[in-house]
Image (cartoon, rainbow, N blue to C red; front, side, top):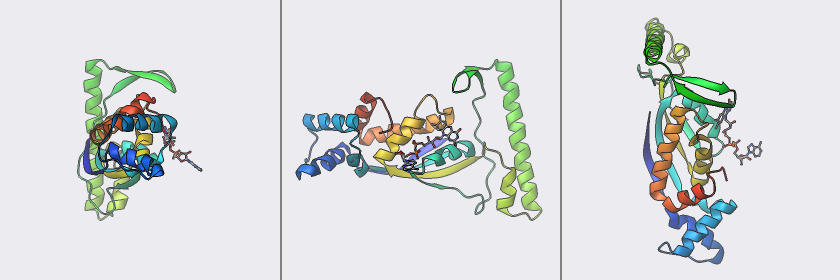
Length: 215
Ligand SMILES: Cc1cc2nc3c(=O)[nH]c(=O)nc-3n(C[C@H](O)[C@H](O)[C@H](O)COP(=O)(O)OP(=O)(O)OC[C@H]3O[C@@H](n4cnc5c(N)ncnc54)[C@H](O)[C@@H]3O)c2cc1C
């Protein structure tokens, strides 16, 4: 999986100046008072100034994680690589293969015995290879790309273009840069958070202090 920034627009100053528009004031540099204002905006859920900062990323992930990303489409724009328009390459994401311990909604993961892990890794690889062989066979037999793709597994690599404003990204991070989210999606989300933190460090620190919640 990889996360690549395509375009990021805005700084902490844009958040501040969005808020200070109510006073018809614009700052050229970030003051300590501005940092305090950002803390207050985030803590109180005054979200509109966050919408003046915007970012777009290319996310390479499994189809399984792409499905989860799609649940955030109400506030992020998401386009996905099409298996109708492309022949999909033989590229798969390897699951971490851990043991789930505990009850539904309240469980943790533990490592599998190395021998078991090695065996299951082989099972995954065989399954991926068999699915991909079936895909090629259907294409070779004249089946369409969109029909052949039915036999491809959730571990197949896909690519998304995800974009949105900082309000949407914080809502996304609250859900996915979180221990409850599936590991692969968590890693994508933390990578996105790292990129956002470079352009709006004060706002991200304020969000940390406010409990990293959906605003
Ligand atoms: C760990 C985890 C596990 C998950 N498991 C599953 C699963 O098993 N199955 C599954 O289907 N999904 C699952 N989801 C997805 C989850 O249910 C949400 O769809 C997803 O997290 C987006 O939720 P959200 O609150 O960020 O956004 P939304 O629910 O899209 O809300 C965004 C904003 O829109 C507003 N809004 C939403 N609906 C309306 C409406 N009808 N009218 C007016 N305003 C509205 C909300 O109040 C909010 O302000 C999971 C998510 C996570 C993080």
